[in-house]
Length: 189
Image (cartoon, rainbow, N blue to C red; front, top):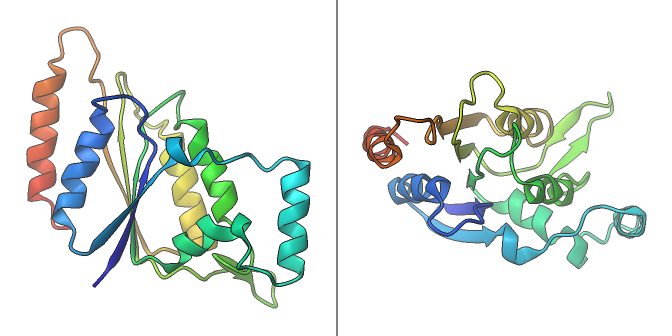
């Protein structure tokens, strides 16, 4: 059975992004583990935490609690990340999460030539986002996650499922959501 990691960065009750993510998750087969980033209270890598992480990594102690998110991320078969479009990207907790995940020796390693080589099992990452206004070409949150997944984790299939312009005057957000849900239900995932 496939292990699916659902990274939930949706903080608003009734989140539109979460609604779409639940439709995506409903199409996938496997055991879903939800990681609610708001409840996790992940801390940024300040000097103290970075020194702790570096010391544990240098000692090869990857069982240390500071690496728990990286170990979880490396072991799953598929990832669904639900993150609303905020300030051209995503909520800051997503950045802190990826700081905790991107660990040399757990999610990637360097080859003798100095190139990153992925150590993650996941073959696909689905990024789900919604925006009140236009996203257009400035989908910087997805671009960041795709950059990490391509460069460090080497996840071969990275897709963005997005719905934008929900809050523009004259748009019916509920109808737009219903149409997007129909589209998701017809996707071959």
